Amino acid sequence: MKKHALLFGLCLSLLFIVSCNKKDATAPANTTPTTLSVKDYYPLVTGDYWIYKQTQYDTSGNIMTQTWINDSVLVKNDTVINSKTYHTVVNYNLMGATTPSFGYYRDSSDCIVNNHGKIIFSINTSGIIFKDILTPDTMGYVNYSYNGVSTSITVPMGIFSCVDLKGDVYRKVDNFSKSYLIHNYTCKNIGPVKRMMIYINALYRINLELISYHLH
Image 1: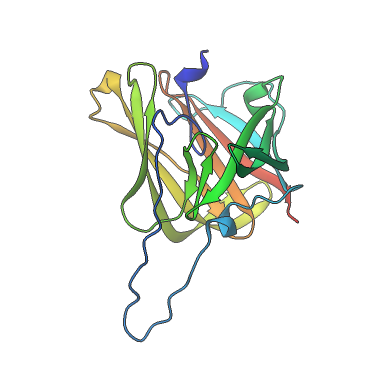
Image 2 (image 1 turned 120 degrees about the vertical axis):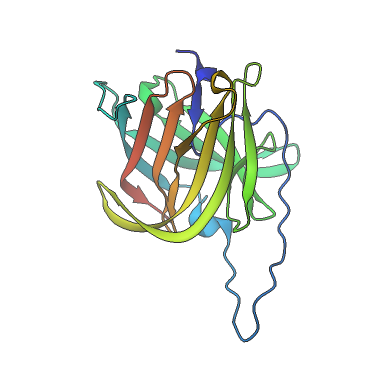
């Protein structure tokens, strides 16, 4: 299956460069505002890693037979691109890939962005954070929004209290009139706990659920 036909829930294809400006929130009277950092939820320290169980589902929610081993994500080292320092993040065995894939991420105005300016993760309590347009010929797009309400998520490693970076997926074949939800659950001081992906054409889904992790 062509790579462009697959929509990754947490980190894939923005066509345009987006900017992320942090806005100061006005705290209600007689309250103490709580400041959150995006790195509280998306750690990027060299040597950090996460291991995920991969499960694929058909459109009826039935588990599909596959032979993929666990997916592993490693923060390998820092690298300088265009005079800016990025953390090198390596993904091993995603959907059975035989070669690792590399991403280069940094904190920009409290958003995690890659070296192309694409937002990877953000925390924001007001509406749509960013829009991900899928190629070719705008075959679909995703509106991502942040839900900071704690949700209890169960994965092989245990039960975690997570926030949700939700994606509303719209497809050209549906005339952009119907949305399909994907969720990316992230736990403070741990990172991504449960990630979801979807094939934009077949609508098969892949869940990646945390098995183990190590942070420095």
